[in-house]
Image 1: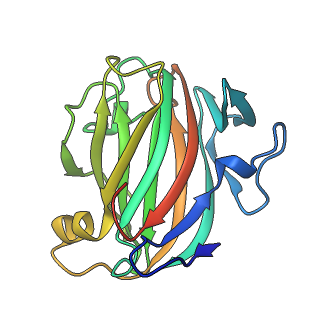
Image 2 (image 1 turned 90 degrees about the vertical axis):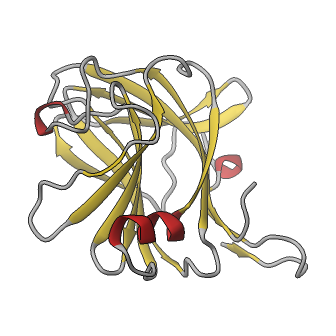
Length: 205
């Protein structure tokens, strides 16, 4: 739902509306995608915060939905997340340890992806290519690293248009999909995270 307000008020496309989540029922416009193992995903209440809960035991899965976003108009992605358990030994810089407790992946019309991750080991602000799949280009940015911020809600925002240009050296095409994901199959461990509201915005908040 695109929210139009006064010209001086930022525009927003709410992709995951935490205020409308019903405990025990996944939002209808999001699909579960399983890469490995058994998905553990639910809608729950964390204190006063309705949220999506993801738990991975040697698994890899995601929730995703299609969108149609012009990054020239809505360049900022804002989201809230909380990690309670990191995959031991996770480090996206090596395929054998490429596990994260929480990821937000932005898929563009040209099959290029920018991924925002909470990594166990890679330093915060690391920005590297992380694709091992032919014809699929992924750049990952470490937004949070390690345990120092675990067990509490963190608000993030990123200029996805700027991050796309930084990664691929060209203007960002339309955004066609969004995914929230968790992985722990490579390290054979357990990870756990929560997601609140996710939105594209015309200005940072």
